[in-house]
Image (cartoon, rainbow, N blue to C red; front, side, top):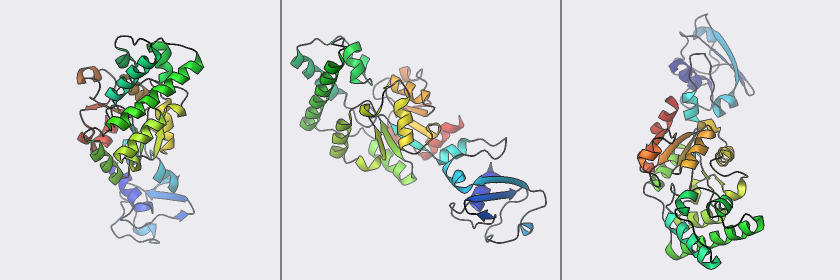
Length: 305
């Protein structure tokens, strides 16, 4: 592994700190090395290979862009985990991860039920947490399955929620801003994947001043299948220009954790909605109480287990 990492730093122009030595033509690079062919410090471009290497040379032919953009396995013994860690993406659920909007959402359902003169089943909010309204209204609440009526109720419920946010305000959960700043400094792209409506997220991001941290947002309007289907996280990874297998999902809901695992991501569960005892059996790869318990090394370590 050390040999390969050293060689990448030595060969590929995009990696700082070493000069290019191997022959390149346009976007193609030949890597010529063996166990005794480690690049000497200060090697300059154009230096003869025979001055650097012993005769036992291995030949590999790869694209520079592929080396930079994707994880590569150069030998059977080499693990792909380090390459994945170099191309991390962070995919965030919204409610219960970035903000705690549960009280506002519960209040919005109660106001909607009062407006519509409908009953709310016991534990409806917990049962429907993380689901799209289009599932909650006909299945969890049992109000109606008529598509136009489901759509009307869903849109009205979200409008009520935004009114409540404007009335009460909203703040990020403790540790969120610090973690986002850490990821931005490390160059890790961040995306949101949520069953929340886009207008809700845009309003809250503006109020909290967090919009600049996210390069992509996937909301209920962007997917055909909500969580626990993997589509939200697959689409978020695509929008962030990351392979989902290289991404870390930050989730609080059991269905969201299931969606992240199904998408092939590593999943970090946050104990904002469910206690640690429940999350331990959820399939999450790590459990934290706050996002600022994590750093880049902790995220990379997820790919070594």
